[in-house]
View 1 (cartoon, rainbow, N blue to C red):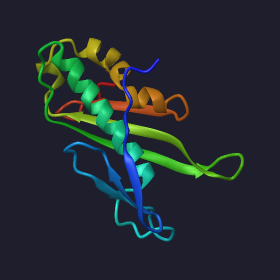
View 2 (cartoon, helix red, strand yellow; view 1 turned 90 degrees about the vertical axis):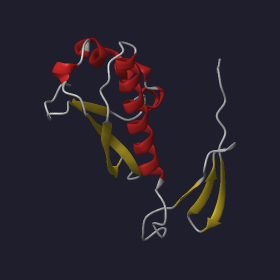
View 3 (tube, helix red, strand yellow; view 1 turned 30 degrees about the vertical axis):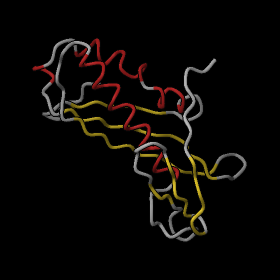
View 4 (tube, rainbow, N blue to C red; view 1 turned 180 degrees about the horizontal axis):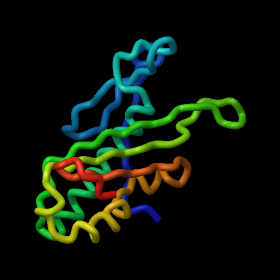
Length: 148
């Protein structure tokens, strides 16, 4: 039972380049496969997957801290995806890693352990992706101390 339906439209512009429309007043974007398949004039589908995972995790961490009226900002995130061949010799995303960095020091925030234990559960995208791709998550504070 779905609560909401998300609809985007893709229109082929040329070869592997597509215009993507999100509707309403949201700016569209162009995707493309990297060379040699495409021309690399836009993010690839794998890059957009990485962006979706990183964006959702960052939002979820921010949401979890804000529930306790805490300010971890600014948040940045780097997501890497390992691409390789599966048993059928097909290219697949084998695993992903997200490194989230908060601007705030952990010592200046309350409920850090509680937030770190639960924020991933709020992330719709990562929890969905994890059903088929392993995703590891690391969280660092503003001093570079690894918290998770």
